[in-house]
Length: 312
Image 1 (cartoon, rainbow, N blue to C red):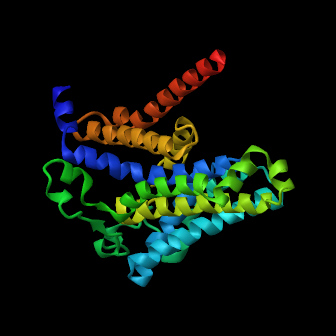
Image 2 (tube, helix red, strand yellow; image 1 turned 135 degrees about the vertical axis):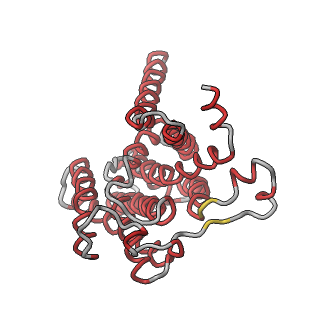
Image 3 (cartoon, rainbow, N blue to C red; image 1 turned 30 degrees about the vertical axis):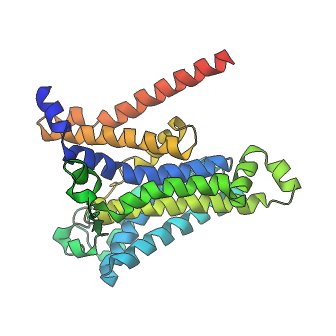
């Protein structure tokens, strides 16, 4: 136990918490906005998988990480709009659409990878295949002055550009929801679509904007996974982060700041699982730690909410 605590109280461990939390934060922000609009997008996992794949592929074929990143965002938005078309226009249950996207994100991405690249051995686009190099990764940023501060500098400085953007987007999303007319319309549609429609708000348009935003955030999260967290795409590399984001959104009370803190909690859980593995704990015991903490946290969240409801 003393060895574990000693390994946790290091800059590298705290650095990993922020690094692991970033893609969860992106997906959580997407979940928050669609929840404010009155529906749920459980297809975040699949959207992140597709964005991760195409971000990695396009960066390789263009030999430019920027175009891979942009295409990852594009794929996330387009696929979310397709989800919206089936759900809002064709009246398909949004939950079923999300399940379909998640299933496609697992098997469909592997199929597309094999069709596009011709690689049939293994399930990964790793550096060993020659498709990915460190030059195609989204760059990291060393923050002047802060990077030279003992301990803190090694925790805060040196992260990927997308890690810093994740926390910036928390604030920007808050501003959008509570300080702009668009945010007011999103919240109005979520609370009472009939009343919003009666004052001239296009409910359908707002729902498309909300789901497109969730796709954009999934694009950021997917690009982070394959172009920063790992050097390339691999099957099921998102590893449940889309579902964890839904839990973070609920635990955070559907608010940006609360969702960010919940995402960091789950990032801590995953970092802890990795740390357990690194000190020799059986991987079969270490791997379930993030998911166990997710279940425990949601249980506590449910109990607290139930008690609050009784008091009212």
